[in-house]
Length: 443
Image (cartoon, rainbow, N blue to C red; front, side):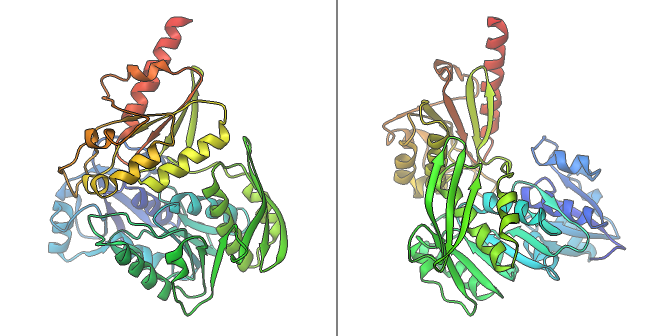
């Protein structure tokens, strides 16, 4: 780090960028950034830290800055372009992350799904036991003096995680996503193989994933799961409306019982990965047990609210595998309630590539509503629509607009899950406002 410079983040409201800015600020560095003026859920933490957020403007760029450029922006962005023309030091987000983790025991959490939840859980557990820096993909970041650990989300998109070389890697799964970049599932596996090659001490991988089972590495690979073939095995699993509990065996040795206030089978796997890493670093098992019990989740991952008798769940799920896991979690917590899903497809390329899988996962709900497809800066249009997806859904599939959320008012004392990685929250807010307004009128 350079105490003589001001670190300027282009796109500071991005989830990874805001987390990184918070870490640098906690370390005593001078930090500022620029972004769109529209409010985002990540900016509250930046504001509380007193970090200056400017509107995008090339006038923001001047001598004395080190620029960290968000990966959502090309080198043609006016601020990035000016910084390069001036000869300022410019890092891409993932390049700077590779520098930040050095000097700590680093743990990179990778996988097509489950990265943020697992990173959040691992950060929570280790932070309660030893000084820990962490960077979570929900915009949360922390830097502490003399940190022993650095826990970070290792994103496979465009192979960005290959800019880091962690001591340990958690790999939750290999799945085909980001069809705008990856050519095939084999291409995705190739990226994870390279990441495995760069890991220094050990890898913890989900044992049910056949492609993870094919990885080769110079360091030990420990598999976690529910089967006898897994090194870290959960058994005697109990899933209730309060959470999940299970015993853990490591190569035949019973490590005792662990409990988490989390729902869904995927969170048992995430917990196993966390237990495995902490155990490998000789963390006391009772301390791990204590910290697991107090985890209350990360932003936009199965976040719950109760309004006018309705349970509203906000979730980032935007891939069929994630949708299936989220509905499974809701069924565990609310086994006797009707579950409806409002899903916003995220990007045209993902929707068309995974159309049948989306329909299959969404049909696990009792009823499905769709919004229009959320485009991204990478693709503003495509040859597919939400109507195409709705035709494959047997559990409803009606198209909702933010101007008319009245079909959701047919539900009473039920569960509605709003899912998506775009601006699904505007639909959610409209519905919540409608519920609150009707509740006031009825009182």
